[in-house]
Image (tube, rainbow, N blue to C red; front, top):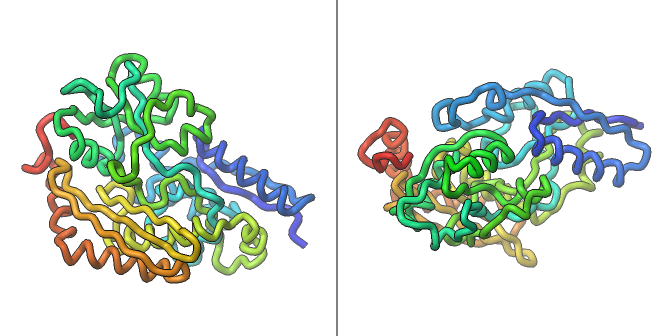
Length: 319
């Protein structure tokens, strides 16, 4: 009988908080199980540049996956939005605990809502997805890059480097910082990243013992939703660095997926909604992605690449 398990995680405050919650759930599900937490420093943690420059795909997950394959840990605990659409061969996404609030939030120095921010306000975000959607709603804002953990970003806001910042509600709530939240943005306005607010528990595909230990932690509606969202992501070969948004929701046995692709200026956006039984999550996500591609999504993503290079679709001073 297995008496211990090793959880691999990044060393950030948020990653550790998430992993401790997984450890507690494992101990509750399996009394007597010894849970060890092993920290792994990823390439994203070692670099100070924006993810737009170093490329976000796998930056916070690859070393954790390699530690799994090398047998250094038994489970990798990921913020699922950081995990590329395709996991490494030999690994499997074994479980997703219940999802946190998937919305993005605004935190401003003057407690303004997004609509009430003065024209020209400087809004910090490290996400091209958020930047494009913010400009879609408020083209008069200055969207500026921001880097660092939650506390670092809050400190930069307090210092006056930004008039407001946009963060994921889930991270603030998991860190006990929800008192900073000024406004929850509706998903219709700011559709989240695939997998946002969900945790992904990854293990070796041939490790049936560990998969059995993780089974009680899996939330079926969350798993179905993120499976569809990640299928959308995978169809584009994309990681979190591209302006692709997707959200799945399960009601009863029905899964609905809403996905969006934008250009960097937020002036062009494609939206697709579709639904299917939750048992068909993978096929539904692929179908939604195919619909986006048939409407010209690939062209918007090519424009996005130009935007990284200062091309015609990147608003001057905005990204």
